[in-house]
Image 1 (cartoon, rainbow, N blue to C red):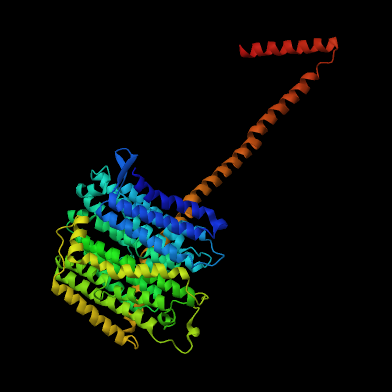
Image 2 (image 1 turned 60 degrees about the vertical axis):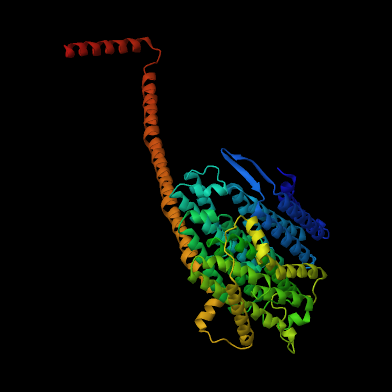
Length: 623
């Protein structure tokens, strides 16, 4: 295996395992060690992106575990490593003295390492292994502060939801083998024979949509907000939720091999971008707003994959990773300082903590898709690919972009208002705030904000052509000038409307507002449609097992005991009785036989005479 590739994969996984097992014994050194490991991993990622190493090793008969850094994965490894470094540097000032930093930093590095394996895996078995580690690490990170029951429950909901969707990868692996793809190489999956090709494609699509929190799986992302803010920043930007979108971008040839998969994926992404954008507009919790916007923004990447826009989806993924991680870190800084994440209580937060406010404002305006910031250009690349698939798809994507401007400007409007007369009254709703922002927060915030602002350069004609060559998508369409102008006009109009209406209630039906605020009741629906029937079936099977299966076993046991008791009675009353009767008879015969034995000769003579007489009578009578 290449040394650079080995270092890229083994260092975060190995160091993460060591730090997680270290516990609190080296708490003071852990943040520096974790950040140092992340910095070395970033260096290895850059080296791997330049040298493009590849390696493989035997796994099963006719099957290998393959790793490679190609054009698409080169972009991803650098993005994952850079965001991980920024988040870990930020996290050094986010934890109390009594918290287990070793476990946190170890799990974060394990999580990032699993994502790096996911994006470099060339075979389905290795991707599955990393996919599972990533899911387990996300469960532990979301429930990091597990002493509060709601956080442990949130981790369980997120894990079980994504885990249910992950079963699609196992279905895909089995279908690929049945379809003749024994090597399980990702690039060989389109060669599977029908109908197994369709089964494998369906499994991968379901797994990807579940991991990326697309409809109908989006609600787990809301629950994941119970985790620490650095976890949200990493999980919702370049790693877990991006993994599903990356997998779909990687497997565009597989989607193209079927007639239905591409359009289905594109519409799933477009509808999620619009619906979850409306959910974000309805939120009054800043982290919930950012979570819903994550599902919506990932929807653009899924739309790009379904439309065949690999370069546009990659640009969107990279720009969103920098933007969203910076926004979550800013929200985390305010949560630590003020103890709240409620938008009404955060009024004036950007004025009180100006560096954080400046970073948040730039990130939110980038998320809004306002030109010339990065997500404006990235969305146009995605919409250009969507327009080739149909005008309706393009219109839904454009409407989702307008909604993105609304929820982004709404957040900016709240945090930039003048401070109220008694701001303290709204603080400390989640925890007791420190009333200060850690010194370590500034550098990663500014770095991510700068990246969020300038990464739109990837959509300019020159860099866009380079990126398309890099990811092997030279024939993808680019947005026409009128498309750029239209999307900019829509974004500015939506932003202006949101700014104007942010101070007053919007005339929306209450039922619709409640549904949007409650994430379209997705979790309640999942509990009603899936969880309760499954639990009901489990209870029914448990009752069947207790009453029928176990009942039959118990009745058989009771019958055996009854038979044993009957056999004991027969043995005691009949067999033993007969033996005792025979013995008693023999004892009586013995007593009778002893009576004639007196030792007197004349008695023996008399007995002999009587016996001879009896024999004579028998002879006479028989004859």
